[in-house]
Amino acid sequence: MEVHTNSTDEKWVSWWQPVVFAAMAGGLGWGIRGQYGHETGAMIAGVLVSLTLMFLLCPGFATASVVRAAALATVAMGIGGTQTYGVTLGLTQDSTVIGNWAALRWGLLGCLIKGGLWIGFAGLFLGIGLGGKRYTALEVFLLSLGMVAISFVGAWLFNSPFDPEAGKLPAIHFSNLWQWLPENEGRPRQESWGGLLFAFALAFGYATWRKVDVLARNMGLWGLLGGALGFPLGQCLQAYHAWNPEVFKQGIWTNLDPYMNWWNTMETTFGFIMGAALGLGLWLNRRRIAVASTPDGPTMPLALEGVLLCLHVFLLIRMTFFGGWVDGVYGSGLILVIIPWACCAGGRIWPWLQVTTITMLPIASKTVVNLTVKSEDIAPVAGWAIYFVLPLLLATALGGVFAWRALKGQDTARFVVIAFLLNLWLYFGLNYAIFQFPWPWAEWTGRTPSGIVFTVFLFGLTAMVWMNWKRGVGNGPDHPDT
Image 1 (cartoon, one colour):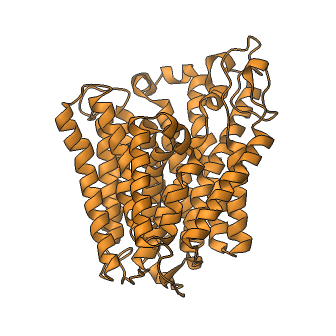
Image 2 (image 1 turned 30 degrees about the horizontal axis):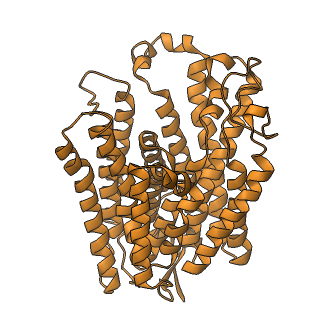
């Protein structure tokens, strides 16, 4: 397997670009995730951040290999959505614990652990995709199964026993108000961070020692840092608002605070910080990027890939529209990633579709359900056409055309920039519809400040493409690797 590297400084952008623009992508993606939630919602941030970094830091590399890396990171970003954190945040801001510094510290510690694990997976698999080591479909599949298996051990050690009726809770538990409220108010929530900790440790250890994948190791650590800083620092803003209401009754806050969605502010800040950390981490490790230019070829038969694609899409649709047992099983982060990871690692067409159609599917689905079923903001026929059919048609056309070109060994060098811009504007547009189009010149609502911030990020990221277009960053010579 030939590995393509680039060690010349003139090919790299300045450090501030991946830091600032990945921060914008993370803030936008994570802020949008707030309206969609869970594992599939987090993948919005995954695809925007990873494509931003591919565009800036992977000039001239084989497009198919770069897309594979972005797809792996996108899927990995969803794992942490399994974690519950509502009560953990409540420990820092609920009215019943305001002034309780011990509860605040405990809640922020929970945010640190959960945030670090959440982004740690994304950083690790971003590095796996870019480190120049070949991971076969079977290898990734078996690793995923191992992660699921060992997660039960971690959950048993750290997240059990859990029997609220009998008053039995884990020794380390971040979703429990009982310890702070003598009246035993609030029901504790089942946590999963212990299982994810063991799963991450297995994947990190495999990449570090079995594969000797230095970039994966380093980016896994940068992901841990980004999440461990981003989540608690973002929550500090929301907690400060809850603890100090008098501050927001004077000055500019007199008019602004009634329209602030502090929860979404926390989410946007979390995404901004974690995106900056991933951007800085990859820039500092830029000389370790070693994308395969002529790899050994796909490690999964195309027919099998097609069957798994149909199965995964079916399960996503079943989970999104009907819930039930599928949601309870396939909605678990470590289960959800088994098929996509294997197909991203060894498939011909899956990576192209993962960063376009597959990530878009549940988001478009939830958008149209919110606008036509849960509310009547738009007529059903128009809603399905605009918010479901059109986005998926555009995404599928883009992913399908370039996957076909890759299969034929044709030029695919423009895919990263086109996919980035399409995702950027589509996700912004879908979320803006959920926000009920909070134009800043219209009457303000609780969505307007977030809408303004998201718009700044939108045009900032669009400007990033314009700034770097002539340099050819992200649009270098293509090396078909299928």
